[in-house]
Length: 329
Image 1 (tube, rainbow, N blue to C red):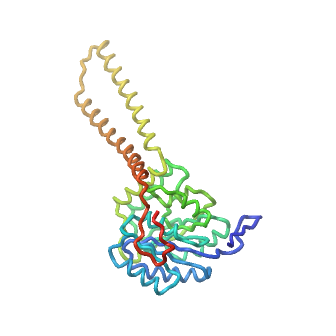
Image 2 (image 1 turned 135 degrees about the vertical axis):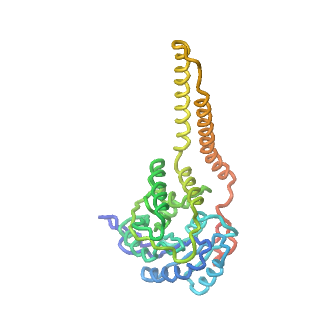
Image 3 (image 1 turned 180 degrees about the horizontal axis):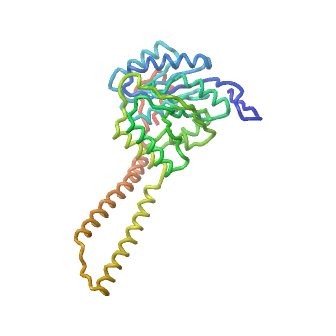
């Protein structure tokens, strides 16, 4: 391994001996070839030992056929194909677990994240950083609404959980072998890969880049899926919603007691009749809605406990280019 550190500044003296690039794919047949060609061109300038691992997450188009053709035409390209769609986080995990490089790069298949940035990530790694994440300086082709909701998500999750998640980042990142080994110890079913890679610690830094338009196809994440991912991320890294439930319940009790005291005092000393049908109904409606909301918070965590106790594998591999890549975990 070339992970020799300069004792004076902690930097690595040379580039990595081997590099793995992991690409989770779901209906990305139109992008895979271009991505592989651009990525291979970069990897060949970095090291002689490299691999690209394509992970088919149960695609319904010709993604798997394209992967097979790419694997047959290029010995450094491998593929893993799931038995069904297990989700982007599972596909990312499978590729990361199968990678063998001294450093591993996780990148999406849509070419919004330029593979050419890998060279700059390697330079940051040589400075002694164990994880180098890509920070979006601009986001071409995305609506103002999506940008605002994305910014709001990072504000919320960073106010509720520790360690904070780097703002304006996706899954595009370089991970050193020792950080990846730590990541692989995290076996929860409900996964948020970028959160887990931050949680493991080690020396991390960001690198700015301009995010491009999707090369071909449409994004697989609509606003509903993004909302589910946000809930998954927050509930996976913070107990704040449950604590919020406790605090809000306490405030409700105090408010109810104070209101009861005010009504009793008005009746005893002023003689006001007890009125307020509308106020009563609004209070009941408000408290009932809050109860349902808070029960939803609790149900989210109970549901996670249920999924974890089932101990099912994170994914199931149906086909692969190399038997050593099969790891149903």
